[in-house]
Amino acid sequence: MFAIVDIETTGGFASSNAITEIAIILHNGREEEGRYSTLINPGSPIPRAITALTGISDEMVIDAPSFDSIAPHIHNLLQNRIFVAHHVNFDYSFVQSHLAEAGFPLRSKKLCTVRLARQVFPGLASYSLGNLCRSLSIPIENRHRAEGDAAATSILFARMVEADEGKILTAMTKGKNAEQFLPPNLPVEELDQLPQGPGVYYFESAKKLVLYVGKAVNLNKRVRTHFSNNDKSKRKQDLMRQVHHIRFTPCASELMALILESQEIRQLWPPFNRSQKKYHHRYGLYCYENRNGLMQLVIEKKRTNLPALHTFNWLQEGHQFIRRVKEKVEQGGNLEFQEPVLYNQYLTRAIEEYQQQFPTVALVEKDHYFTKRYAVYLLVKGKFWGMGYLEDPYALGNRLDSFKEKISPSPDNDFIRGLLYQSLSSGSRISIPLEE
Image (cartoon, rainbow, N blue to C red; front, side, top):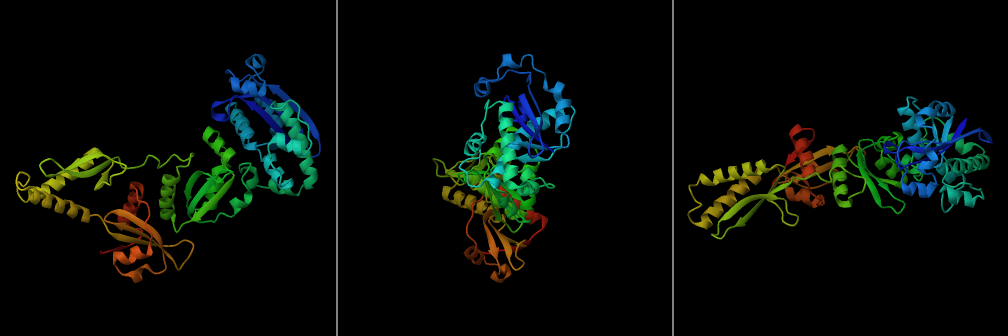
């Protein structure tokens, strides 16, 4: 019914590392039914740090079988049994990945003894295998070797089954239960509280530090898919080990979730986020006076502490913008070599005319969660002012100040502007042109 598994490896993630030892203990919930253990030749040198931890050296595995040669037997032992391990996602990701490479797909149910122990023996200081066994007076021989750790896990498992009388265990292994795929330290209650609607979710460490920020159309469904796919990459396995908590912020729609996600990533810089960290316009339009007192427009890489008149992703976009402004100025004659004050006035007026072409508008949509509430997004001269909720945005008329009084300012960036421009051009939301 159960297969208690422990492995030793050359590294922490399955996509680029190999198994050096495996132990499988067949168990019926009360006692062992059989045991298999072997060293495995990984086909590559074992790192010194791994040898120092496990004691397994290159010399010990030189005559050991390859994983491919024992894959049929391992697959046979695991078939039709629940895959049990301490921090099960780690062991399962390796065994499943290497069996698949050998041509033996594995689709077993999983059971994490860390998650089971947290429910059967709540309130312990630590649920690592060593500390858990110490708390329960379970001996461990050959620590950090596959058979030694598997044997201790087997005793631990029998103790938990006896203390639980099968109630929690049955619930955890029934159907597609979240307990089978969640990270070992993440309470299932925090997953169950996620609503079936749009929002932003935060994966946090034990100390409540934000590890990852994501957006979802359906928070509950999206977070479950984060963990249900058995990604064997280092990034995924590291996240699985570190995440202890989930919190969330509900949003009116996917658009609001995208905006909030962008803002949070740029404010918090979570270590496991990749997207949007490098998403920004690279060039800015700046204006300065030369030694002759004439205003000059230049395109430069965006400066951190100096606001740009406008931003561009490509250098040629900026030069095209400058040409259009200069053409507008030249309609008043060759002013550059005349009075600087006059030229500067024409140039300032031309810039303002182009800036006025950028929209000042309120985008309105209904809130997913509350039927009598609307989400409102403000664009002021093409820049994102902020977003918020209003019960009746249409009652404010078309005065910009009225909307600014109701909505708090919010960080602006190029990604958010792009989202709102796309929404404005598609007509997917009601737009209210505003006047200052």
